[in-house]
Length: 515
Image 1 (tube, rainbow, N blue to C red):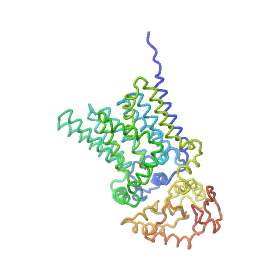
Image 2 (spheres, rainbow, N blue to C red; image 1 turned 180 degrees about the vertical axis):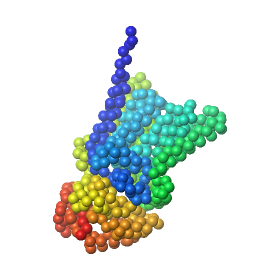
Image 3 (cartoon, rainbow, N blue to C red; image 1 turned 45 degrees about the vertical axis):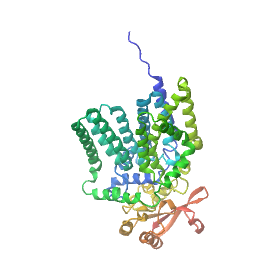
Image 4 (cartoon, rainbow, N blue to C red; image 1 turned 120 degrees about the vertical axis):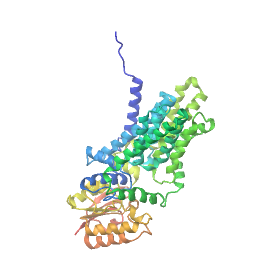
């Protein structure tokens, strides 16, 4: 008589817990308004349908993979925020799964569950602005798959794995290039270990060639839509301008100290577990120390919180390694009790300062995350007003860096610059960019101009060339009529069709229509 196989309720329970936690941390962010980076990617993907080619016709600084992801989301629903946020949540779920698989491979199923549970509040620390479908969280997927494959295939590596690794590396780099160093470390270490095992130079050479072939093949696919006519524009935006951007003011080691200061009150148990690794230095301890050091090395100067998401997976793995050591030292006979208590305490410490996030509406969640200094919650309202003041064939220009408005309104921008940051970042290009934008606005006068008055929109910085800003105010005064604006009074904001002089300075957006 055949035995009936019952489902493994422990595994089902663990998976259900992880899914529940992911949804708990994200349910009210899935429909919260786009922030400006998301707005740029969404607008770029949407405008591509109207022959506005990324890089040539829309100056987007990120490599193409993020645009493809937003295009996939728009195939699901081109009008809503939630499709790409769901894709971002799935990406984070895959990252958590990879963390669990690596931990299980190294230290067993119990520690794998602990790693997954702890990783969720760490990946969603509000200081990282992690709820947006941004490049860093999407980049982690191929990086973590590479790391997972390393731990499962480093002893015996089938040749086809190297081709896959090359493809994954290309996807990761062309999502966000900050992962280059950690990928180089993993691949080089893997190749060296394989050589030490086989002592075969020809085998090493074949593996390396297959890796390069996989990388080139995926790179060709990624850039195929831009070959050959738009490749120069892509190089200018992705490489040349980004190198200048990375060296611009504000990128100092002080940013790292600022974020470490914010993280210490909630991550101090994690930092203590790192110390256990340094003190006891167990087998292969250096591998985890180097990977986390490499993660920090690529982002330590950045003032943007979402960059710091990339340090989380290696931080967790290093901490779990420290936890395995401490549990053996404390009381191995009561291992599960100590593990349960430790996990619960760490989890509570991490979420306690942010408990109010779980009760917020999507709009309130956005304000809680970004404040009112970033005009994200009112962007949809302004877009609705734009649709009434213009037709679908009219150009609309947002003077500032808020392209989410154009995406919501489904209106094209008359210039390739959907942000004004490029006009102000000190570079050899800013006068050229400003002149180009002014020429575009003259040749294709927008039906509506939205003036963003929020500082973070980057309309103009003191010391920047005045070519663009002088033309903007001149043409608004001569050819446009103020049709209303979104006015904030304290923490409350509302749309006004008629703006008084006293309200002008309180408005985040002023909307002008061509006479």
